[in-house]
Amino acid sequence: MKKKWTAVIMAIFGGSIGLHRFYLRQPELGVAYIALLIWGGMLNFFGFPISAILGWYDAYKYLMMDDNEFDRKYNSNNFRDRYGNRRSEPKVQEVRRGKYILMDEDKITTQGRAGYFDLIKTKKQSESLKQSGIKKFKDYDLKGSIQDFNKALELNQEDMALHFNLACAYSMIEEATKAFLHLDKSVAYGFKDFNRILTHESLAYIRVFPEFDAYRNNQFRLTSGIVQSLEQRIREEKQIELEKLKTERVFLKNEINL
Image 1 (cartoon, helix red, strand yellow):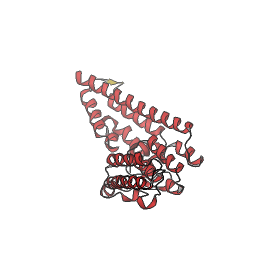
Image 2 (cartoon, one colour):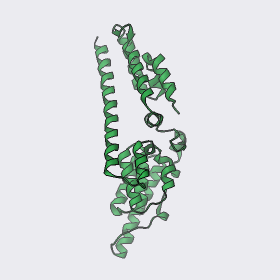
Image 3 (tube, one colour):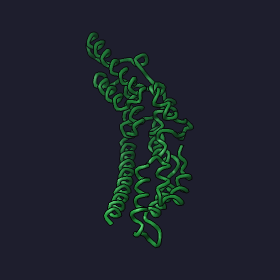
Image 4 (cartoon, helix red, strand yellow):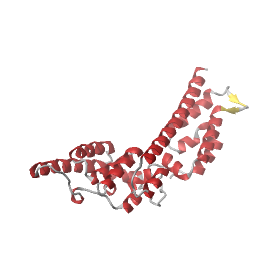
């Protein structure tokens, strides 16, 4: 569990050697700060090395974050969300993740208008893919589980369990928009266990978004405004991170060429 104030203090006093980056599990950036300090020894501002100034900027950025945003960025594998639920330790997650999947073939009523035998055949194919996806999810093969769930969904697009499981899987790989959309479809097709949405551990990532409050207050249904706000927030965060990385790479490249 990474602490915001610990990162701030490290960035202020150890920013020149990227101490805070190592603390936040970003060793490649930590090495870049050390390289800036070594190769940029002759280039400084008012006697302070560039890496130290970058560290102070990082400290300011952390201070401006609220706790939920800091958790979402730096504690994605282990943090207590706003509803008090603590994620399991990573080594436990890698061994077995069966508790994350809510529904299997015993908790879904297949809907469709095809003939009886076609319906049975389609259901068997869908259930086979669903079970394969659940097994891969338990083994932490999240991308593989998403592929199987989507294939099963092609056979039964109104399966609320598949939509819920996809929401869980997309949340685990931090694809917030897709997680929200599938969670919304799960509710649209009959899912009513709203307390599970508020407490399910694999949905912890999307619960820290401000848009989740609007989603909950709207009876757990999305609106175009909520989706637009979410996508805008994600774009802005990605752009900020991209610009920061570009700046650090330019500094590093210039120092290496000196």
